[in-house]
Length: 314
Image 1 (cartoon, helix red, strand yellow):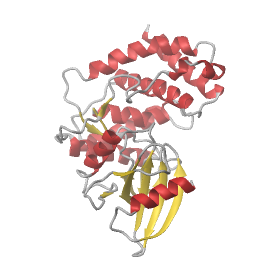
Image 2 (cartoon, rainbow, N blue to C red; image 1 turned 135 degrees about the vertical axis):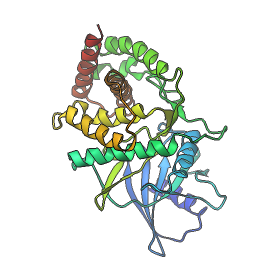
Image 3 (cartoon, rainbow, N blue to C red; image 1 turned 120 degrees about the horizontal axis):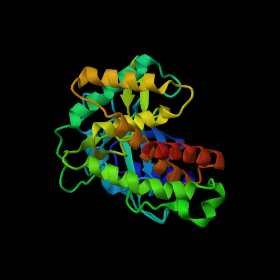
Image 4 (cartoon, rainbow, N blue to C red; image 1 turned 90 degrees about the vertical axis):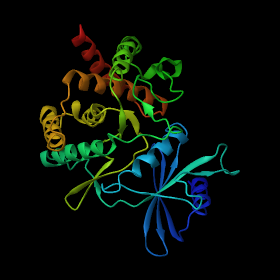
């Protein structure tokens, strides 16, 4: 953390703010710091990890946020060169680090605070985001990811085949994954045939949406991709689909009800939603193995869910 704090300090020298305090917050997918300035302003600083994104992803996020000025989202603080992403090259790290500074967003995660009203408001918020991005044309030099295959990150590999993960896998995990992935890849690719994709958030999970003064705010746009509204809803639903603390049908109905208040003509195919949730699970299972954040119980449970989906296809 001391090394990464020095990286953050080096990056902040490129901004026109006077930092009074730099506080480490968390190391999750990326590394987060909280900034307090001498004027008592607050900002969030993020150091991107190489395995989570690349410069193209970061530039897509900056572009996305620049088109959401009238929605409760963070704005990106530009550095002295007028850029939203600061590259830090130094002897501190083997590779250059990418850093972005955002306005601070007050609020609490919706995780653990979900109600039918919150889900309905989340649907309205999602539809509003989609309405803002439906007509946006990306600059030619920015190419967001597309969810047209299970492993859609650049250089993402199927690590579940590797020998040192086998002790964590259920007896039939490899077979089930090898069976489902080609099926999902074909269906994911088909979604893009004949449809014009748009910029979407692509990670509307319960920790990326905050409650503040009875309203919802959304942050963490680094997963932004070219996709379709159904992608965003499926990713949200993924976190509740197999959670016994929620009635999934009620969650889905509340979110879609809110969505249709903004976009009344939009419909969502249940088969496509289920397929996308399984694709998310397959991807996430492989990712959790890769970052050493999976145990055998979790892998077995995921394998059973995927196996059940396969059985229902026959």
